[in-house]
Image (tube, rainbow, N blue to C red; front, side, top):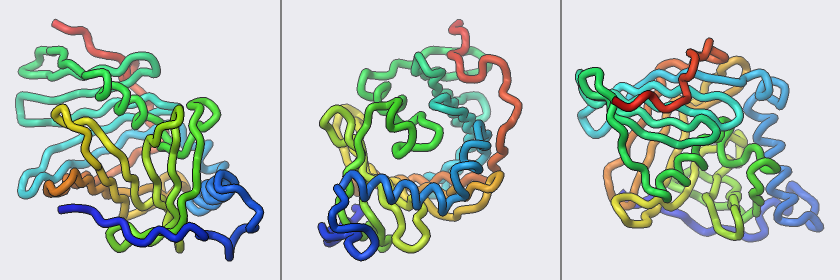
Length: 245
């Protein structure tokens, strides 16, 4: 299933913003509108950690998943592959790691340099538009576009003169509804599309509870979040790599 990008309109927000504004300035204004739309800066600042419970859907198959996250960029993803085996990935702010737990035994799994970079980039608690000063990224407004029938304003996220991803902010709700990126999968650089939907409030912040990921013409992988617990008690060392046996 290929995703479609249609008719980017360079003039974009001329009806909404000053024509003298720079593209970066338009992008910053859109980020401000996005934060206001999802609940406001105060509500965003109050949400410092989350525990997400749900499952991934691969066709008829459902795989349980638990995600722990904390500001600014700590994350742990536990994917239950079957009754005996789980894949656990994490980033503690310093080290990105991946292990497989089988019958209670912890075995380290290799992450390539590119996989590690991608995982760290995706670990930011508030996504690719956040912590711009800390991360040294730049935003560039790229116009109005439609991605798989979702119309909005496209913002390109640049890191060290290279495009990291492109974010679509919906023209009516100002929610982030899509992210385009390229990832190395099985040794190949392939386009990846994430689409976000089913927004519900969590401690006053509207967050997506359904994420659909499409790689080239493969069937989509859907993540459905049944619950999101705000500011949970974080178990000691939850983001650190487990001891390898």
